[in-house]
Length: 138
Length: 138
Length: 138
Length: 138
Image (tube, rainbow over all chains, first blue to last red; front, side):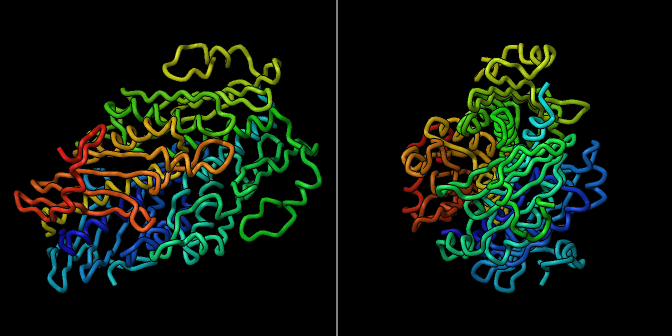
């Protein structure tokens, strides 16, 4: 049997892959970014064991990515930050997607099994900043 | 050369195929249906020549489609109605997706080329009902 | 009523939007490009009135787009050319997606209604080059 | 820090969510199922730490799901079985998606860290049957 913590991490990965590949390619502009953020978060929060999803589409990156007259671009990982909190059988997993070396990286930030933390201070502090909408830090 | 009306119909089809295949499969529940409706409409309205998109996800159909304990289902054409208004070089095209014989059908409702209508009264009346959000009838 | 030619162009647009937004974002590398080309073409050929789809993923562009150590990139319109032939009630529509001014443009190449061509020589010649797999020129 | 086994399970989940939400909704028929199986497997095998993916689209289920004259349906989890093998820092994770109580369930089959197995015989035997294409059992 996999441990509850391993299962929780598997569930967390499913949510991330789902969010990314369901919505990557969506036409986006600064004016439509807010509704897309909300829909992405609420859609994935429907999935089992998913307690909170926070998506931030960076308008400045979207504006920079608009390279033709049509005034929109397609959603990619480089345009957004995503944070999630998954809970499975008493294990809480926090994940983030953010740019690292110019490449959007999905990563485990913290695995907390019944109070025993699986993260370091640095990672924890990553999640200390305030966020709009659902709060994966709660 | 294709005519402006033919080009307008081609553009209308692109929007429909884009909306359907970008968002089909999205986890949806009655509680997340509103944000998904908004995101779908605003995303596709970014595309060229797309003047208005109206998406209605039917909560009753979503609820009926939730067949397991997880409390959500995946978006399919059978759960929503979509209406769009495309404008290209003076030609206005109205389209709808709705269930017909149990199958979601994308169809041209009206093609209006500089005042000359390409639709019948029946089709036009289909679009006379009020709709929330963007109004493809405007 | 829309004309058969307009309906054929609408159907052609649906196929293009479907292909693009179903498969955009798919992880792709030179070694997986062939299976993706085949799957994209055969999937869309399932759709009504779609007679032939030809997809060419350009390995050199894929290789150029691989900008991190993982050795793959995500499919976008800039990495492929697509040609389709749609037939509806005696009207044949040929479409292409190709890069124009650095932006992938979906366009109507030819609309042939019962022998009356809706295209010019230039556009027709665009489709004269040989292509692997399904032949939208046939 | 998350453990290597937890990280491996997170990576495994990402692959599963990616595969499902990238390809769900793809038009499929018995005649296009083979190319879709190959493309799905090869696309996800591009992702980091993904050693093998095996996708089986069940033609009989596809045929049963074709409920209209068009002769195709849209890919959903109920039409396919998926098996994957992920390797991360010496940890091997085997996963499956298969129907359970009429619902497609993504699950961890085995987590092997070094030589210490995290699965029981029953789960292991699930993966003993032969499979076409990439072999997640290798």
